[in-house]
Amino acid sequence: MARVCDVTGKRKLKGNKVSHSNRKSRKFQEPNLQSKRFWLPSEKRWIKLRVSVDAIRTIDKRGIEAVVKDLRAAGRKI
Image 1: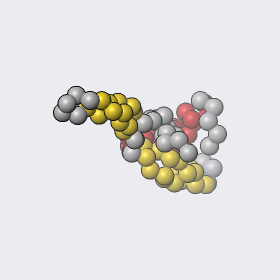
Image 2: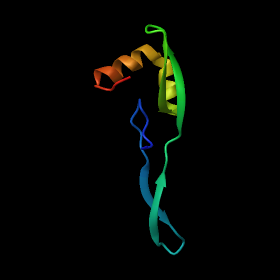
Image 3: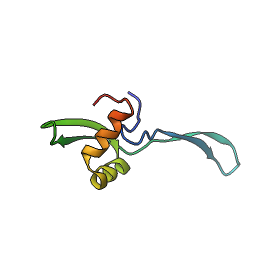
Image 4: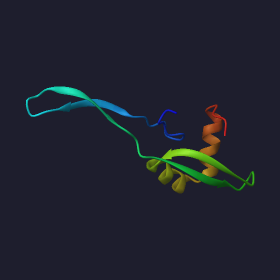
């Protein structure tokens, strides 16, 4: 399973780990993803999303209804 946020689309970042002697090796930074259930009052059911902490803050601010509406408009199945 890919580590990608369902709402924001955040993925892992790729960069270089640089030693004191300036040798480079690949380094990855993973997003802070959480599996979380949200209550969808309009459909009277729980939905389970794999979201980043930034997306949880977005859902708190805008509301789960608005976020789900945008996801469905983008063609995502919820």
